[in-house]
Image (cartoon, rainbow, N blue to C red; front, side):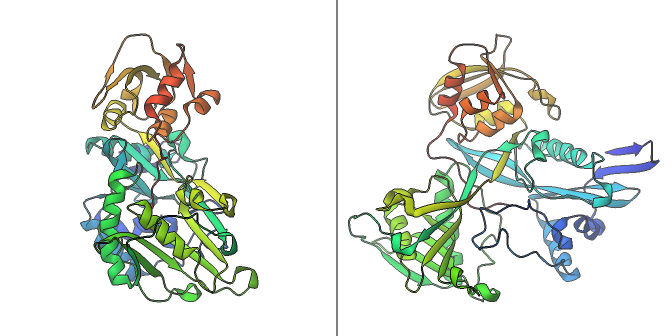
Length: 439
């Protein structure tokens, strides 16, 4: 895409960077320069006492060289950049994922690593890159885009809206008693990073098949697990659960960070925990919330509806200390996206979209009909049951948001009696969607 800024007389190009332009591409991104790339608020995905992990240092030339070599070879990585008179002033990318949706999976373009340098902001370059990425995703057959928003007010204007949430919670050890249960026929074992790297992909594959909102991991996702210390945080520790046949059916990563103050001493931070069944889940938590020489357990990036709460004798002991949206969703191809998923309650719904300025083919009235395994979504000239904004349809897509609340806020306008309730029954899922890692 070549554009001319008539006022400034500058030539603007929005296109993928060439191989020899990758260093310039990275330099337009906050992470490569050690600049902030998150919203200045407490992060629900961070287990430490500070709002966010310590600020990164600028990437070295060698680090950028390795990243460039990796990205160039990665067929799932699709970079885009803005060049003004040949200078890279903006950069972004999509990564091709699969995301679990009700009844199956959908191909998804994950928008990541986005930035415009400070001297060139507020000129529409982000919108141009976003449009290019949407067009590219549609050409690849990806009907859905998702991202983790670094700032809550930016991405709504491109049609994105929160689709999953995450929480950080704390538990005082002296309050952490589990309700009685049958004895565990399996066993727990502390293992090293090499064993954890083998166990995680198998556990995650099972979780992803059943958890709505979960993502396919990129190659090498767990390669960074290590037994080496991480500054004063100490090394990650790994706990696995085996069933009675010796098969791994649960795993947790945790650490015991050092604290210079008494109020944070004795904290155990759980960075990841997944289990394939309630027995393994209960056993992993049972050990971690009663670990010797600790007084507080912190778990970050957890679902809003953590089952552990209902295993405690005192449900109030689990206190949510931070909560934030996680993945934001944006439907690029409405009929294709809606037919990728199934619907818990069969039915039909006629709805109108009229506000999608970036993917205008979505703007019309659609008839969604689901009858068990068969789902269709086709244009119709019939009177709609409701009008819904593209962002509202995107936020209910995974089934975790309230259609009634969106209607109350003005994002859905009903035209027939019972339309909001029918939308809610067709789309809502239980448990809520959740994704355990970002991109």
